Amino acid sequence: MTHKAGFVSIIGKPNVGKSTLMNVLVGERLSIITPKAQTTRHRILGIVNEADYQIVFSDTPGVIKPKYSLQESMMSFVNGSLADADLLLFVNDINEKHDEEDVMEKILNRNIPTIVLINKIDQASQELVEEKIAYWKEKLNPIAIYAISALHKHNVDGLLERILETLPFHPPYYDKEEYTDRSERFFVSEMIREKIFTNYQKEIPYSTEVVVKSFKEEEMKNGKGEMIRIAAEIIVERDSQKNILIGTAGSMLKKVGTEARLEIEKFLDKKVFLEMHVKVIPDWRSKKNYLKSFGYEN
Ligand code: GDP
Ligand code: K
Ligand code: MG
Figure 1 (cartoon, rainbow, N blue to C red):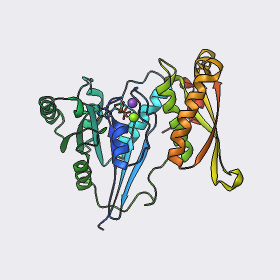
Figure 2 (figure 1 turned 120 degrees about the horizontal axis):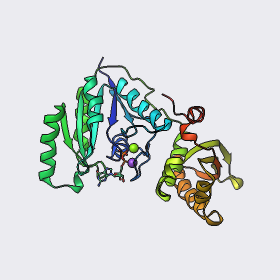
Figure 3 (figure 1 turned 60 degrees about the vertical axis):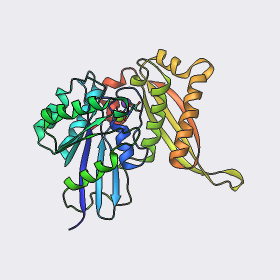
Figure 4 (figure 1 turned 90 degrees about the horizontal axis):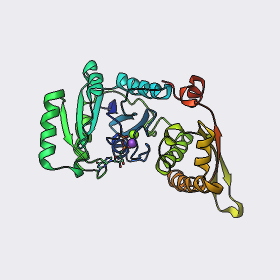
């Protein structure tokens, strides 16, 4: 057996750059990225395939103390990803003073080889980088520490090699053609959610879920090739949120729809027709049956 394969979990506090890193490592834009905490709600696999190895990365939600059922489910995705991991990438933001005891507790409890990634060094001095390296060495004694900038793809090449060194010899877990476990419909709903995170303030992003109701390939008229017709439902918790989401004469929803469509067209490499409706489901974030139907199960 000369083929290596394994599961590598990317974990850390919210907003440290986990999703940015996963996309860089996989070379695909799988995970949505915004400046807001709790953008990522699921465990999303990103698979790197080469002739002699397969690395299965898991992007996960940032570790927080759950306050409602949706967040409990988000944390169970984190725990599930830890349970499967051959290797952990513990990401932190060099400029944030998070209390990371909860993440460290998860790591130290499990005895999984860990690499610490000190991210966003593009925004820090060399002194601070050295200080942090010493700090994490002392705190966790990881198998390696890398100071990186995921955003600028800085110091990430060496990381991939180090990951490979630690992975066991094992046959591939997934078909070597696959680069994720998620469907096109899932990524479409995530891209719409990303635009909601970047276009609205306060509680709107956190109160919103997106469900793709239909996804159909159609021949365009005049033999211009194929297009995809997508119908999506945006779910919020209250009528007032619905009004904000739609905006005056539908202006905000139109803006979100246009931005999302452009993103989806890039991703699918096809022309897209996107239709969106807003629906109110009171307190969906606390209702197990809705959470289940939206895929928040572990
Ligand atoms: P996550 O919540 O841990 O998944 O973090 P994201 O990947 O969503 O990133 C959160 C924010 O940090 C986004 O605005 C990213 O553009 C930004 N970010 C990520 N990596 C870096 C980096 O290396 N340098 C800088 N300056 N910003 C970064
Ligand atoms: K984020
Ligand atoms: Mg994320």
